Length: 119
Image (cartoon, rainbow, N blue to C red; front, top):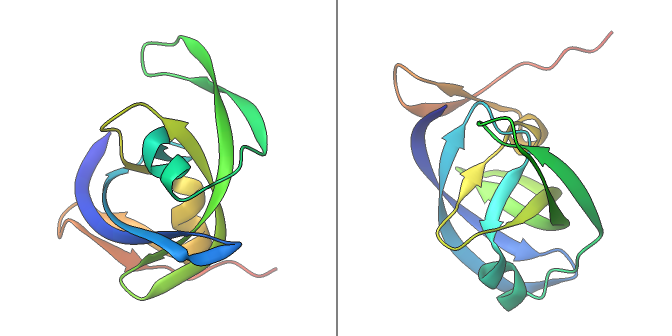
């Protein structure tokens, strides 16, 4: 379920000079972050593997997956999984939010820092 949008900076982890500002839909139902494949190709992101992904209508598709660096509101991850998506699809997934230590607040429509469990 899409809640709101956030601005992010993404980059090639092996060549940080190759970067792009994007706007991502915060999607609490998406596991991985999705960026259009033309943007990832511009950044020269390499395909690391292919992943089976279940869509909202229960179909399973296979898409290439790579890694990008990402920064949102001062929170950074040097590498997070990213799916090579269709044109116009910009989604912030739960894996990236966990890596950044952020969670969506649907009331304020912002990401907020969360405490991680250490046991």
